[in-house]
Image (tube, rainbow over all chains, first blue to last red; front, side, top):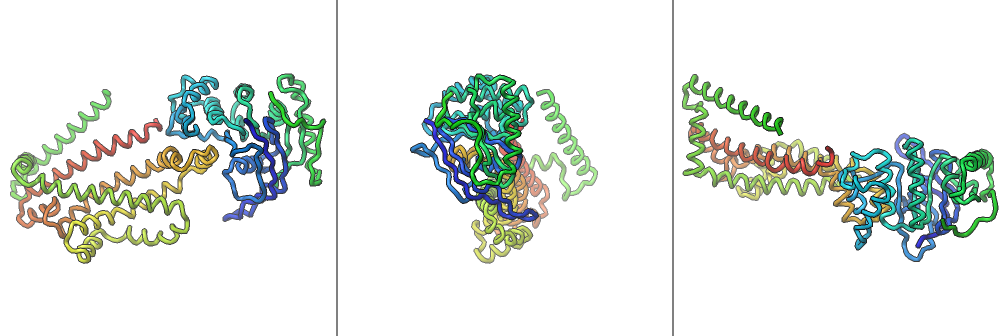
Length: 262
Length: 250
C-alpha cells in the first residue's frame, strides 16, 4: 500500500533569534502527489525543500496549513536525511532493527542488508563505514519499515559521481521491488530528470512550487542525451519561472497520469 | 597485551620504590610519629584480622554508596530536566551555583544541627555536597544532545522508550561517567570529614580517635585501607564500565 499526499502549506516561518531576522521558509505551497509517484522537488539551496520534508515527516509541526495523506491509516514514512544520521553507538544491524515496528520480523533486516551490499558489515559500527556504505545503510533503514512514503533529502550529495550513480541505481531497484510514493529533494538537474516521474520546481525563498515538469519518457528508456536535453529544459524552466508571479504554477508537457507504477 | 603487562610492571616498580623511600625516611627520622611502611602494613594486617577495621570500613562504604547513588540519581534527573527546559534552568541556575560554592563543612554542620547527629544527616550532607556538580555536568550533556538524531527518531516513530534507551542515554553516558568518577573522588574525601564531625563509627571517626591518641601508625593503616578500596572501585568498576559504554568509539 502506498499513499497520495495533498499539501497545502500557507506559511512556514522560522521565528527571529539572536542575530537573525525571522525567515519565511515556505509561503502558499500547494501540491498533490499521486500514490506510487516518484516526485522530485527541485530548486536552489535554502528554498525550503528540506523544511517541507520535515513538515511532511511530522518532525516540524510549527506551520500553518495542512498535509493530508490519502491512505486510511497514518502512513509509515521512511526518511533518508542529507547526513546519514546513523546512531554511532549501535552497529549497522542494530540501527536497522531500531526502526522496525514492534512485532516486525527481524530477518527482513538481513535481507535488506544483503540487498544493499552490507551483509558483511552488519556488525560494524558506523564510524567504520565509508560514505557510500553509510548511504546504503540509511537506504536500507528507510526501507526496513516497509514505507508507504519515502522522503529523501539530497541523499547522494556528498558522494563522488560514480558512487552517487550506483546508489541512484540501487534506490530505483529498491523502489521497484517495494512500491512506495517517493519525494526526492535535489538541486542537481540531471539527477532530477534521471529519477523523476515528475519534477516540482521550487522558487527561491520563501519556497513555493512555481512550475512542474512531468518526464514523459519511461525511466528505463531515458538515454544520456535525453537526460542532457531534459536537464537543459529544467534549467530553462527554472530561469523563466522565477519571473512568474502568478499564484498558480505553470505547467509543461501533457496531462499528468494519476498513478504510475514502475 | 605485552604493552599492558609492561605498564603493570612499571606501576609495580613505582609502588615498590615509594614504599622503599617511605621506609628509608622513617629509618632516618626514627620517630614514633613517622612509622615506616613495614610497621604500617603489619598494623593494617592485624587491624583487619583482629581489630575493628572492617566494621568501620563497612560503615563508611555504606555511607559512600548511598550518598553517591542519591547524588547521581537526583543530580541526573534535575540536570537533564534543566537541560531540556529553559524555564527550569533560568529558575534554578543561581540555586545550583550557590550550592556549588557552599563548603561541604557548612552543609554538614547545618544538617547535624537540624537533623541531629544521625546517619540521615551525614549521608544527606555528603550527597548534597556532590549533587550540584552532577546537575551541572548532566545539564551540559543534555544541552549537547544531537537534534538531528532526535529528528530521526521522531520521523521513524520509534517511541519515547526506544528513543530514550537507544538515542538519548548513549549520548549522556560519557557525561554520566565523568560525573560518577569525579563524584567518587569528591565524596570519599568529604565523607571522612562528616564522620569526624558527628558519627560514632566509620574511618573518619577512627581517624579522629587516632589523632587524639597520636596513634599515627593505625591512622595511616586505616587511611590506606580506605584508599585501596576506593581505587579498587575506580579500577574494577568504573574504568571497565567506561570501556564498555564507549566501545563504539574505537
